[in-house]
Image (cartoon, rainbow, N blue to C red):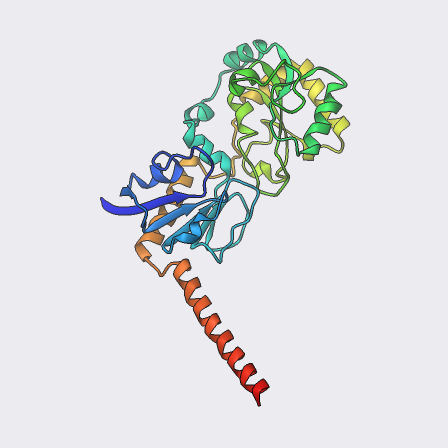
Length: 312
């Protein structure tokens, strides 16, 4: 295999340079070497160290942020952008690989299995949240709690005696999980809707208004599809009392039929990066420096002319 020198910077804490979505994908095609003078740099939105690299730069973010196409040669993000230098890769896709979720997500439960799972859920609804800045989520938690006890296992509105150590184990006992994003933006879909699906719960989702392009709308409750919170809560309480409806929902496949498969996504991402490597174009960083150099020369000439004019 062809050797490819790569590096990663400005990612989240504890990011593993040799065990992540991009490294694992490229390792099937290249002999990868982590190098401080790479041919290809992957960088994210948690710093500005990428500015120190003059190689080809690929930006990735799972945050609700926009790529700066003047700083990168290509960008992967959650957004629906019509740009030849961009490919949509939401955060939940990274989670699927990192936690090896695909086999479980693709498994089709029998009616008997789904019935047994639902009957084993002894608690109504919960949320596990550490970010206090989403007012919509907090307001909904309080509104739903007026009708029936909702447990909070995170640091926000905690009412279970402290933060839970294992979120997945905690939510497994619940029928419904409040799965609100930290902010609403078209295309911005994180792992929040997928975690309860993995534990056979029904997500109550708010955030991306286009979420049904990613996930099967029959598998969760979408806040934005109801005229009011009262209507949504009425539906939650109705499903809670109707075992057959609930079992129908957790039997549904998780992803939208229109969405490309995870393996198809892998193939497209690999093809994009391979094309960037093989074309070996002059990196954006070098082109930007050349532009700045030209701009500085232009400014110097203008200053010189102004100075000469003023001196006459």
